[in-house]
Image (cartoon, rainbow, N blue to C red; front, side):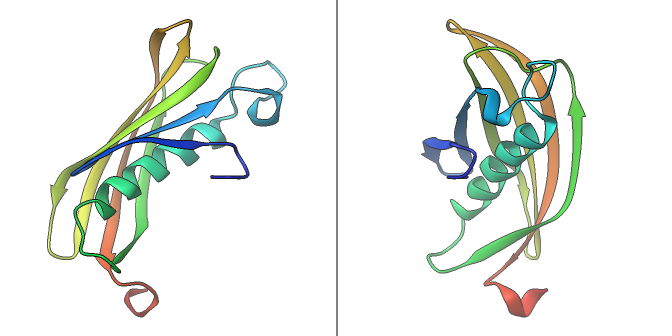
Length: 125
């Protein structure tokens, strides 16, 4: 996330907010944010939401992700709000909404549903 310039803004149990200032570095030729940047912050917010419910030292990994791009992301920044929908023993399902913000006004530009495997890392893959 450092490479993109994303920042962790809020963390609460089962919910995380990540922001990404919009700039030419994360934009496509039309000037809107690249879809890859949008999905990256959504995946990050969702995965961190999962980790917020796990014990210290645990890890998780995305095993499935579906995205709906709803509108071009233009403005000052994008905000991804990820939350746990259902935490299970082996997998956790999440949802993230991604908004483009311009002078304090938010517009929903992406919706992501993702599934994560619960585990401590490499031995689960």
